[in-house]
Amino acid sequence: MVVDEYVMARPAAALGRYVASYSGYRQRGVAPMRHLGLPSPYLTMILTLDDPLVMAAHPDPRQPPGSFDALVGGLHLTPAVIVHDGRQSGVQVALRPLGCRALLGMPAAELAGLDVDAAAVLGEATVAGLRERLAAAPDWPARFALLDDSLRARLTEIDIRPEISYAYQRVLRGEPVRSVAAEVGWSDRHLTNRFRAEVGLRPKQTARVARFDRARRALHPGTLIAEVAAAHGYADQSHLVREFRALAGLTPSEWIADQFDFIQAVQLEPAHDEAHD
Image (cartoon, rainbow, N blue to C red; front, side):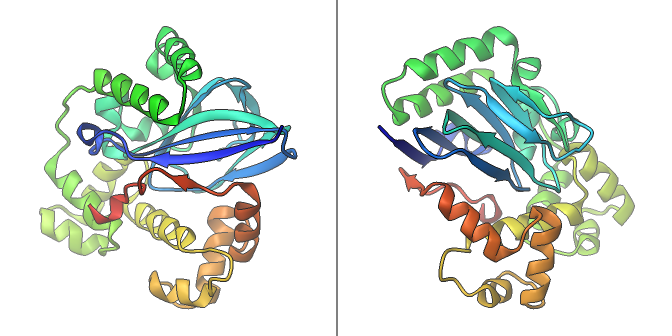
């Protein structure tokens, strides 16, 4: 029997500052597949339910391919490559960069460009126990509720410099770095250095990835690429195509074909969009 599920949901309200969304996936009896993990404004945590996650390539080419029962991936500017042989299942958590300290005990910058074993971040017993409970849960809502409970239990209130928090939200919206630096009373260089030390990307890189992420989410079969480019601040269609090649390694048309041959999402609730907080 073929199983092909993909479900998204929001976290509990208390986690909204730290987590953007959850997704659950289960495939069995489908064709072997190659999937791209594209740059996005969020760190990624994946907890598998059975077979390991097979990383054929990491964003940092110096990391060798490998398999993971659970993984945490930092912000990155090039795609990861994930493969499976027709069977995979797990839950994925989209972590907000400024929530990383409160949930993981470290700034997002420490994970920038890296994929690491989640046990090295959360502890082996924590990861093993959570995976066991997730696998035993009867359905996706129950698994997402388990994630809510587990992540709430980890929360440690840590104050991020207000200048960084303010700058981060403004940068996500595409505000020029110079203007943002002036608003918080810092030089361009000081803002860039402090921002990168917390987030892991420079402000301009963060804005670039956020715009790319919004544009790719607007692309669907039948969508006019030129209209998406205009709606998301690209100079023209060629500009958007160049950004896709740089950040995804393929064109928008190729990504649409790849994505919509992968799986169709069934949303329990709309995923939270950080750029519009």
